[in-house]
Length: 96
Image 1 (spheres, rainbow, N blue to C red):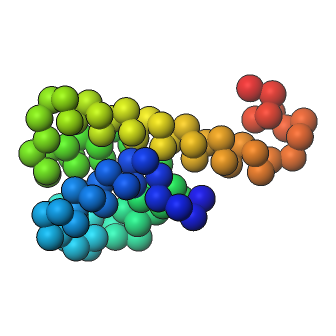
Image 2 (image 1 turned 180 degrees about the vertical axis):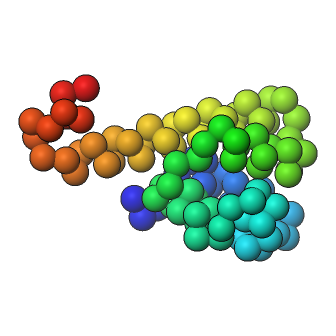
């Protein structure tokens, strides 16, 4: 994927609105900036721990945190579908 995922758009907007650099957000979330950039652009999945840490970092209320989780799940599904579509037909992954 080369475009921002729905989760990537959300966390990028939160980060930029708060004047935070990618490097600083990555450091606060205890991941590398390369990994976080990959999450924004759909090269890496957002795990539950990352989403929870991002919700805390930005002080999101319960509803906003829930929305962020939904966007992460959607983005992870899009990443999976994108990867699965590149596999040769007849592989075990295409049979799921």
